[in-house]
Image (cartoon, rainbow, N blue to C red; front, side, top):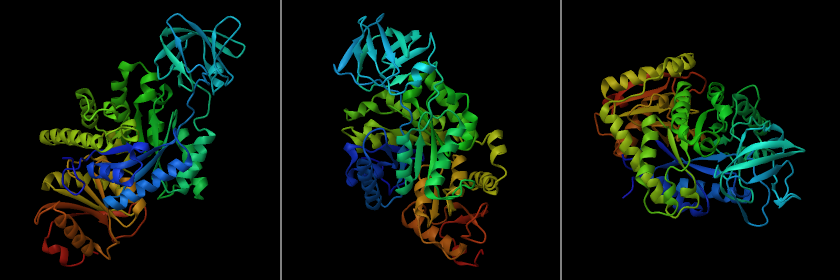
Length: 510
């Protein structure tokens, strides 16, 4: 019923699925992989390192069961601002009510004037907020305006009613908070991620490119790399765009991060809700202009937490994200605590396939923008990728094949968003896991061939043997000469190959 990993029906768009109690068993994760999941997300906002270790072990076991490289992405909490404890369980706030936010992390109580006092875990909220600023609680369910500020307290008036309960989130759309982007818990989670060989790490509430640079510096410090040099096989970074400050620094954020996430949860609270679809397109355009992958996240198939099928609006949301150029789409509670995790991934995969088939039928291929060319043209692999695009269109290639030592060649080819799959062969397991999140890239682990001729034989044996190609199908092959030599810019050769052709056993190319 659902797309299977060993068929031609896998979408080019990648699926990120969050692990949780509903997906703790390796067999369930493997089932999601067979339906199209290629990245498992660990949400560090919920759980302990013992929990994360169990989920990671299950993901690695599922990878063996499915026989497909699976990337694991950690998602750091960031400085989430929350109210303190609410001993009463939940307190109703009605329109016109006044309440106080204290700079102490105290339990909710009434002061001598009968006003509700809420504590907060971030004293900077009181220091940074100004009169007239909006203050939202519980993901915007409760809206208020700051009317007074004195003695370490904000007095707010409710403009949208709701119930406040313990540790609900606080958002201040108009306030530039002075709190650091990374917390002590984030640093502990980063250390755990490095030591446990995770593949991607997402940073929440990014406000500038410096936040990502600081995360990279910490990663290098933990793994012992030279901070002045990028580790070729390092843990790669995702910048979550979800606060207004990030929108004014998109250029520096896209330049610093390895990938971008449109985190629509907090973005939809921090910004006017009706602006989120437009901001999604703007963020995606900026990321693609810098040659970076984009993940679209939050509430994509949320009804499937408890329903066996999604709503029409949710399916349209997923399809439009794909049509807009999303490299990956993400599931959160749908798979972490939902009742139908495997079925949810199946629906997402089929929806992505339908959108991709529509664009392929129209002959739509996203050309790199002048800005992207200016940024990437200094690298030989980027220039070669442009040649691959022209060659693939000219010969109507059925498949693009690349040998990649550390994933760089696959990343450049993915940016072209070609309508055919890119099979990335490598002997580097972590590189294959990482590129598995990139649009159109299908990673395959093999031993390093001795030379280019042996590589062509391997291509034929694998792709024809799996039924991905038939004899005579045109293929564009990208590799280095001499073959298999690691190093910057070593991917330098474009070769036109026909599956099963005699050239695969002819004169060596090296």
